[in-house]
Length: 114
Image (cartoon, rainbow, N blue to C red):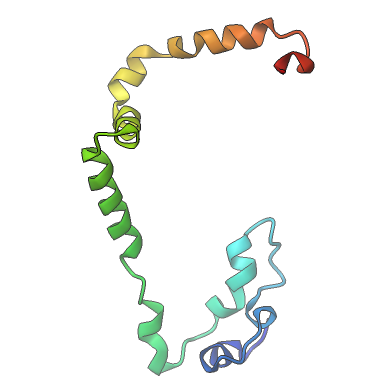
């Protein structure tokens, strides 16, 4: 990681290696590994607003997708609504899976998968 990485980031001179937290394994926490040093630095006072540029984007996208899918008449809308119908899902239990479980139980070896 690099102590001056944040300033260099805003100047466009930081390398990816300077922004990484090499003490965190990429397999354990990829985000922390890639952005860790950057996240631990204090932003320059004139750059504070940059950090908040994407606040609310995720929730706005989720709301928009929810609205689009709930009114969609096609397959995407049907699938979305079916996934939300917990009462029917709970009532059906594992019964819809029975034919597939039966087919799996009849397999004698991996080559039978075809």
